[in-house]
Amino acid sequence: MTTGGLVVGGLEIGFGDAPGLRAISFSVARAERVAVVGASGSGKTTLLRAVAGLVPIHRGTVVVGSRDVTRLPPELRGAVYLHQSPVLFPHLTVGENVAFALRLRRVPERETLKRVQELLTAVGLPDFAPRAPRSLSGGQRHRVALARAVAAAPEVLLLDEPLSALDPTLRDEVRVALLGLQAEYSPALLLVTHDLDEAALMADRIAVLLNGTLAQVAPPAELFQRPDSLAVARFLGMRNEIPGRVRSGRFECALGSFPVPAGISAAGELVGIIPVDAVDVVPSPSGSARVLGVIHRVQGTSVLVSRNGVELEARAAASSTPKAGETVDLRIYPERLILLPAIA
Amino acid sequence: MRSRLRLLMAGVVILSAALPFAVLAVGSVAGEWRWPALVPSAIEGDAWTATLAGGTRLGPALLYSLALGLATGVLGTCVALPVGRAIAELHGWRRHLGAGMVFLPVAAPPIALGTGLQLTSLSVGLGGTFQGVLLAHLIPTTGYLSLFFVGILSVWDRRAEDEARTLGANPRQVLTRVTLPMLRPSIAAAAALGFLISWGQVPLTLLVGRGRVPTLPLEVFGYVQSGQERFAAAGALLLALPPLLALGAARLAARDVDVVPV
Image 1 (cartoon, rainbow over the protein chains, first blue to last red):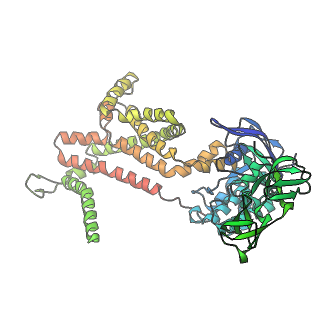
Image 2: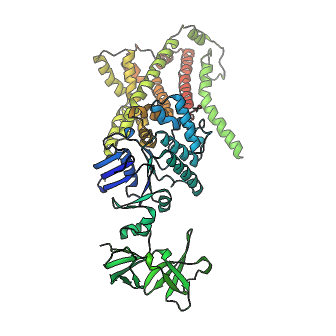
């Protein structure tokens, strides 16, 4: 049990006739950031709205800051929800938008103005109080929406795809503002996104929502190195699945026999995953693998190779990328091998 | 070539809009004006001087119609907004049923509606009264305005209201601080539309008012029937001005909200 923050226990939400979300349990500590990732339509937004009290739940509990808010209306939950596109009230100035929650609580006007100025300064918009929302750029609107949310002093900040609608430069601008505000005011932060990079950049832990349940909740490094299941690994975009068998501490497959990495207890029929960056191609005229194609990505270049009937994606040095049809050798780092039970 | 065509089109539009008013303006001061004379034989300002001096039925009728139109616009909007919202929040056949029900008074011929309302108003003692005519005007007006709000609120973005709730606003505060201010242009347009529906209403006023509720359209009708053409033209001009003012006011309200420093 965390002190403060958010605790969700056994949540069940229906999607009409569809199965919906079930047995959702997780916590977000004060000042912690948790990202929920999942495919489009997996229920990420519904989960966030349920925590905010904006959609009904069938079963389960929502505790915010040690208070059970399951049956409370949204305004009494202490959880502020922000949509993917910032929704500023168009009939109010930027300053009045930020002051919205403070005026609802009848905070003295002098204190309200001081707080508004502090928050606008914190998001890098110190002179924007008199401006109309329609005069702001996309990034500025996001920052004002964040300042307005933080002004409500929430225990929990719920962000729905906070950076998805922004171009890459604005993403950095809003991310910096968001992380700065969270560091200063320490709400628990729960965000949902379909972008794994965004989740890894922003979150202390990532929760993977698959088939209506949380398949795994782990820090980014652990999640990417040790997915709990083949379904999670596939969702994370991991390629290079090779069926095999563990025998006498070694994983035997079509590519050869590799020692089972330390710390993994496995036996029997399994699927091995060799991460792309754990296989290097080495140009060699007498190599055992043939290059099928070259794949260019922002993160780097890789090649698709075939060896013993197994197709693999492997990392290639930018200076010596082989061409399709050439033969290469593969250098595999077995300590990076991931062994998972096959999906029945 | 294109700019000349545009100029020509603009001229035609302006002329077609202004010509009826010009004819009415001339007619309101025209002495004898028979075909094929292009201009009246004399100018006589008695219709206007008498109206301004309170010597005709047009002045009181104008005030009566204004009061009736304003009350219909305001009350109709107050009723139609929640009705429209309730229908807009329904789905599937329920929404169709709700929209169909508010469409009924709009679809019914005014004479049929007026006949029914006349019988009802007589039975409850409202026949021939301002209140009775107001209620009669409210029936088609509420129907029109409810459909107007169903259209607007069916595509209304609820995200601002959701965020206001999680920021700490209860439903009443969301309504007064977010929804109504954001709907202000639509509310102004609805009130103007309600005013206009009442302003031009003749059959319902005649049947429910039983001739004892002297609105401007009825008085103009009376002057036309009795052959007092200058007075009829002056009344028709008075009849045309408030709708223009109402549309102008709605247009002003629909402008972007002015902002003031915090």
